[in-house]
Image 1 (cartoon, rainbow, N blue to C red):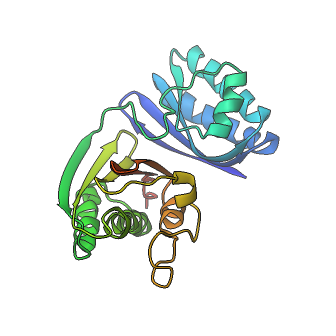
Image 2 (image 1 turned 60 degrees about the horizontal axis):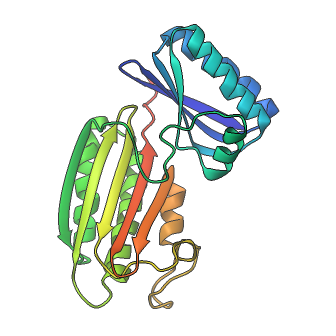
Image 3 (image 1 turned 180 degrees about the horizontal axis):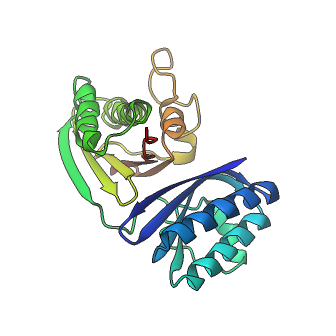
Length: 252
């Protein structure tokens, strides 16, 4: 099963696809995407594939067809946040991959804030509250806000417990909102770094006291966010990048 949700900003139409795109799912998505294109005639249709877990050649056909449809209306199509498995499939069809970097965004943020605080447990609540206060003007739903606060708390806790195990160090948090209500939160430290990122992101793995730490920090982040990226180097610190699309509240 696959779903698509839409948001618009200026001359851009964002289509956020999620789920598994096979032959059956592609037929339903095709109708929804074409209806949205004809209704809005955007200059650029942006297909966000960050939530797609599987796609076969039917998905490639879906994208190529929407590319032709967008061009017939005088517009273009752009793909962003495609996972590696999808990128391999798309390259076979010579479909350009714009904005598919693991941790970055090429669009300019609409609004940004940045704070720095010490790696003290009392500052976990401060970080959660600061992120929530900044995002309040975008009117997220209660579950969306809870997801973001949980992910921020997990990332900050990792900094406190693992980045600075025997000292207090600086943590920076940058919160940015991009067109289409896409939230990107970067939490960075200058601590010990992570020598093996894939292993560190495995559920139940921890470098802390196993009797006190569950090793589920990254797993929780991934379950609450649309995308989680990690950049780190031993002795140079870590950057955790959290991305989530805030869907519009249903009209009443």
